[in-house]
Length: 409
Image 1: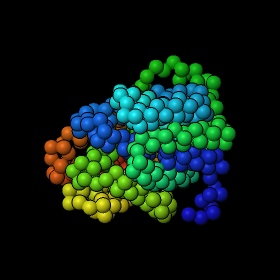
Image 2 (image 1 turned 30 degrees about the vertical axis):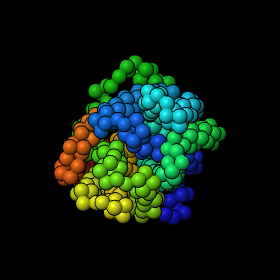
Image 3 (image 1 turned 90 degrees about the vertical axis):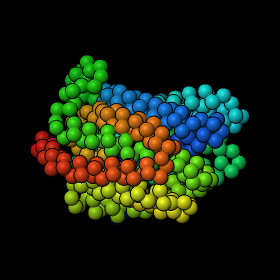
Image 4 (image 1 turned 135 degrees about the vertical axis):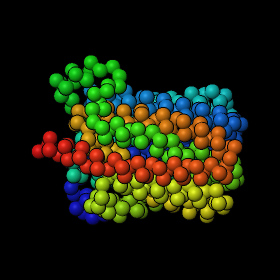
């Protein structure tokens, strides 16, 4: 990371990145420890948790799709300033519910409510990053924001794990406070990054749902199709991995906090060095394939891990895979998308791939509860197939990105 990297980025990137840091620091623990709360306090089964977690993913993606359309119609900032207020209120409700061991229905409804509202912001934030970065610097912008998100994600689980010693309900209180801070940053420091063209806006207002016109190139269709299966296997590092370590390996919540904190720390340390390599060599699809292979290796090790240090090693490998994969997703999508459809394309991709995450949550928790040892070998094989698939469509992505450059020149 050098001064040239910072100097060539639009200054609007920084408040967006800081807001994402605060958001992650406050909310990551809420999502991470929610399955453990349902299992240990409210005695839900693995399947029950899988169904609820899967429904959350599907609901999130549906809302992201429509919010993606609306952010292209009305701009980005409306989503920045109106969403955090009810979200903060609902996190306070969730805190009180768990603190007094209240009716679990309030907790589940609160989870669905906060996830729904948080999902409306995601396409707006991702599209705003593309709005304020040039074609050549877009990968840099997403990399910076990702590093800030993971800095927050490193602190969040540590805070949550520590607070769980006193009461795990405090993670929702932290989430509420962080959301209020995020609101002030987005309101006072972020300007509107996109003002819709009136003529284009008339066309988009006539659209009521997913349009097949958005899939007018072969690459987008193939990328989304592979993304469904990739999301299925990637989802296993979420609730499946968390409950596996907690229930089958008997790790305390604080240790699980250490494991996920390491993820954020390693991203902060190594994302920029990897960025300089990825930005100069090969294509985004080749790096996604590399990431899938690294994920496969981490999944192969999980059955043989027992102690905290074993799982820290697993998470270190997982994080390397994540470093190869995560920054490329939005870069690829916004590179091939027209400027007036960036939010829409992001929403569409998230909607399509959510079916993989939905199935992955339910099926993953079912099979890991039945076959906790052999399950991870099947997941590793799936990631290997995904890696091969990304390599097969890499040339098509190169052609599509060249077309975009020609249209802009």
